[in-house]
View 1 (tube, helix red, strand yellow):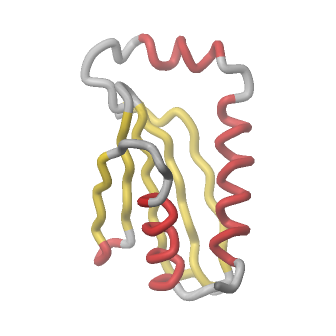
View 2 (cartoon, one colour; view 1 turned 180 degrees about the vertical axis):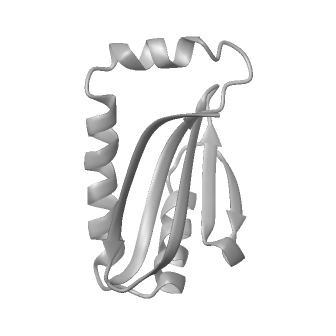
Length: 111
C-alpha cells in the first residue's frame, strides 16, 4: 500500500485514554467503513470506498501520547488512478494535515 499523506503530533494525555477516544471518534464517523483495531499495538485503521485506508498509531511520548496518521492507497483495482485522482483535489495533503490537527485538539480536550 502506498502512503498518500502523513501527519503526527502529541496530545497531552495518557496513551490508553487517547487511543480509546480516537477509536470511539473513528467509530462514530457516520461513514460505512471497516475498522481494524489492535489495542496492544495502539493501532486502529478505517477502510472504506474503493481506495481509502486511514491508519492511526498511538504511542507513549514524554509529552503524553504521540499520534501518527497515514492515508494509504488500499485499492485492489484501479490502484494507478488514486494518485492521479488525488492530484485533482488540489491541497489534499494540506487538508489531511489540517484535519488531523483539529482531531488532535479534540483528543486533547477534557471530556
